[in-house]
Length: 423
Picture 1: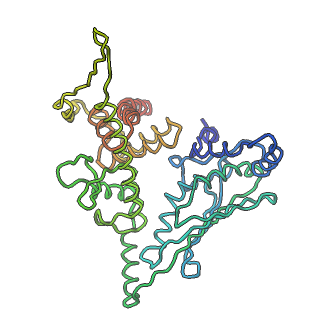
Picture 2: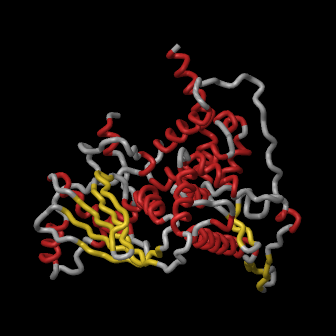
Picture 3: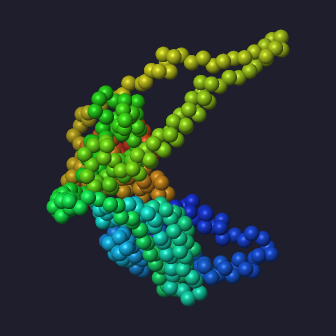
């Protein structure tokens, strides 16, 4: 498969946004059909809509100029104290606006605001395309809560313009309000803060931040009911999932100092509590279906007999013991490359076998968990049941966990056969 075939096989970055776009383009009635058709012809020229590059496949240094993907430019500004404080122009972006915000723009904005006496107020978005018949779109959102799904939907609407050489631009202005602070010692404090920021961010990669986040959030005592990793707040342990750890890693990589559970950002607190609430609701619904279910049957005399399902308390509370760690009796395969790189290569292979970004993200989470706990492919292949339980316990869906564990052995075998052929 050549490069263009690979690009054509890319799915859209958010299928739900595409569906919203399709639904919103239908006319409300036959009477309004001419007007609606004219509007659609102005906003969506004839031709197939393009898609974004999935974040898992994105190569930041690669040029996508001649490839059939959605491309757009973004000019972002940080406006505070009645003047522009920071900003730059980002050219030829090919991932979805939501992904660009989460992984590129938000860390830059956090770095620009580090230790500044500012408070976010609102965000203004201006969408435009270099087509004289199509007007620009202006939206405002509270704080930094931009509805990126709306932005992505509009870019899909305008994507056919790209095939005729048009350009799409997004101007994002973040408005911050100044907060009064004491001016004494301000100069020396600012210098110390800048030096501390540079010391924290110099040479710190994402992998190191992820490992630090896992280590920091590991439960210090006996494993609690929330798993090996949890966030402790006001004496309560909150369940953590891989995407929570990634959020902390991004926060630290952006230069923010985090030395303990009290230093987590407000957005992390909100997300963890919301996810835990939804988890508990699902667990409660499942318990009601299983333990609270009653059914009726007719006795020999025709009367109704109620049968209540009774579960053995001892059996219900018994947890299967964790499988013992297996150690191979034969020598392991040496691929002549670092074991961490083997895990990354294997994860790339797994992501290439699925289409949706959701599944690609889960395989990325499995990779991060594997590296954070210093596991490798031989560990996966030799301890399938143990590793399967490990991934499930950390929030990886059962199907992804099963595939990630079961394919490791055959992947190692194919790599070994390939090495033998080359020799």
